[in-house]
Length: 283
Image (tube, rainbow, N blue to C red; front, side):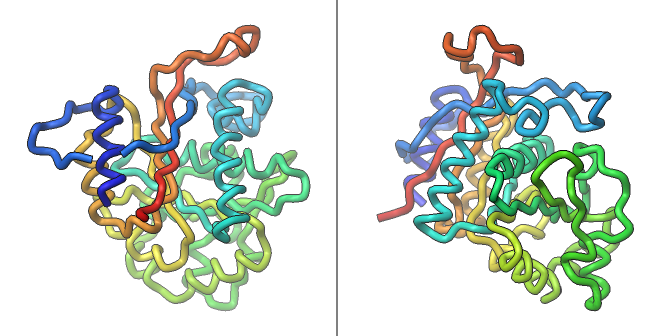
């Protein structure tokens, strides 16, 4: 895990986290780095899709381009390392994991021939359908986990006007741990692998609940979303300690201070930024 800790130390020196590094913190690497967006939390009333979902509502914007950079990384790893099921998580709540998951799925879906599924696996605090403005579905992931007769096709919704399918979580589950531990989830994701090119999972935060640890066997890689100037560095360290380092494909730093390049000076949108970083594997 030394390269992760080096990346973390570098980010802390740059002021990316809510708390400064301690002298007792373990040292440690350089990583691939680029800009990703800080976004306004407005609501687009005409589409009922929240306005910060720029990959869907404003794909020509500077902010959407940053998600296309993330898309390019995922597409490259799809070809080189068979990355197909990508789980998006964060150390804690409020770091922007759902926004990142939806925008990544939207960016992947911009390829006309791509078959993309966005699945809400956060059974405790589901948010995907609300942010997308989708009406309540008759069937959901919770229903499919409880009723073996239901197939993936019975539960998936299509986002009107977009090349994107969504598997809603449903209402907050009574026993999410037991549901995610069920072999039904593995069977549903295996079905998704056959039907879709990319499956993006919006998962619960990694540290406060054990849910992500249950689904590790079902995913090809994790993206960890960190809120710049907000997420404590120690929370990310704890997340990395709890994870198998081989499953982490990148860090997304959400809401940083980078400025839009002059090339985009004539475009509308918020001026802020964050970074996403691809973390190289251990030698």
